[in-house]
Image (cartoon, rainbow, N blue to C red; front, side):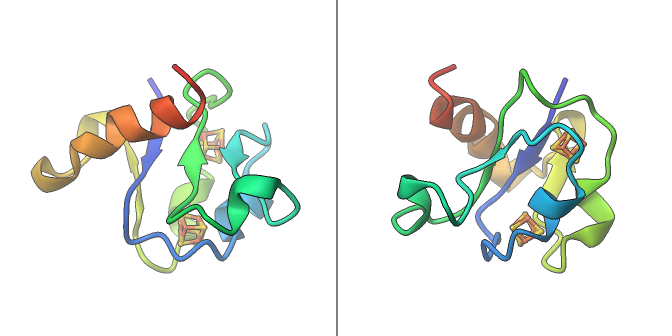
Length: 84
Ligand code: SF4
Ligand code: SF4
C-alpha cells in the first residue's frame, strides 16, 4: 500500500516536510523539479503513516484505496516516476 499524489498538487513541499521517510519527490533541489507538474510518492519508501494528508492545502494526497474514480491514473503515475 502507499499514498498517492494527484494533479491538484502545487509543489509547495508541505508534504515533503512532513514525510518521515523522504519518499516524496522531486524536491526543489532536485533537477526534475522545474519540469514536474506535481510531486510523487515512492510506493516502496512510503510507510503509510498518513502525515502528508492533513498538511496538504489542496487535498491532493490519498491512500491508494481511496483515490477518487477520476484520479485512478495517478496510482500508476506515482510509481512510474520511480521507474516502478
Ligand atoms: S502538500 Fe499537497 S500540494 Fe503541497 S506538495 Fe504535497 S501534495 Fe502537493
Ligand atoms: S504516508 Fe507517510 S511515508 Fe507515505 S508519503 Fe505520506 S508522509 Fe510519507
